[in-house]
Length: 333
Image 1: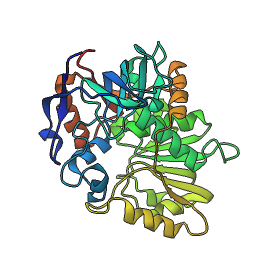
Image 2: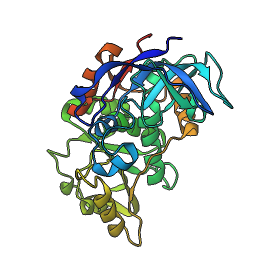
Image 3: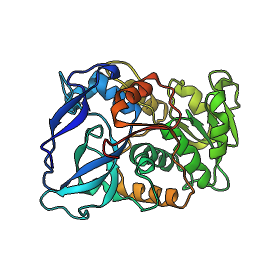
Image 4: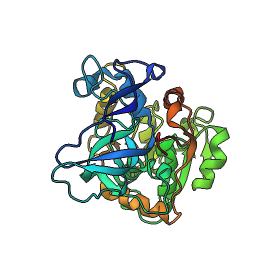
């Protein structure tokens, strides 16, 4: 194996258009880690926020003055090409998928703890598998937190706010699979897609305000878009219902913390508004792969970009209007 590799990197905090293709050392897998040859990386809004170092609250963790992980990409599918010491559950030559620690997917190779990885079934393309760890996992955990399919008798009515992005397209499909009547907000041009995924009603909340809906209309709300007044969201859920906040929107310094504190205050005695802190869940990822293999869940990919155009893909994510997922294929794919 060559001792250097190509990776899209930015050594300072800033916009996505400042990412450049650089030659950097191939990582050495540590204890419990494997080295992957990257075959596909799916991008997320979080990749752009970490490029910016926004909010400032994250910088003690991700780098005070410059990014600790200058290569972005959190969701990766790849082939195991080397094993670190004490690796359990991974084999050389195996195709796997998982969520990375900090980033690194926009490179030829990346090291990752074997405990985060799940084998890819042979009938699933790596470009599809790469969409699942963060976006699919977040949607799954949001619906669990809302109790959809777990705590509601009959057919719960669920509102997905911001349904046409990466998390939203999975949330609509999974909520429908769990027996919910799914309402969804999205731009009008994306409504046919969202309805095909399982929504029974779609509307654009920027043109048809949520304030026009009657109180107690929904058993659960999953807010992915952000920007909605919390009191308005609370008004829309029935007694015992739950609003789950997926979005990390907020100010430049503290990010979502003030909104999360307001949610706690408004939920005293009821826990009706609950912020989600999604975590890597390999067991959930394995279930998502099963659903994809069975054709019950379909990753929505707006476009696949070759490795040479990764910076363009990041800029598209930064623009904020991607439908479903954007995937960058590995340089050797």
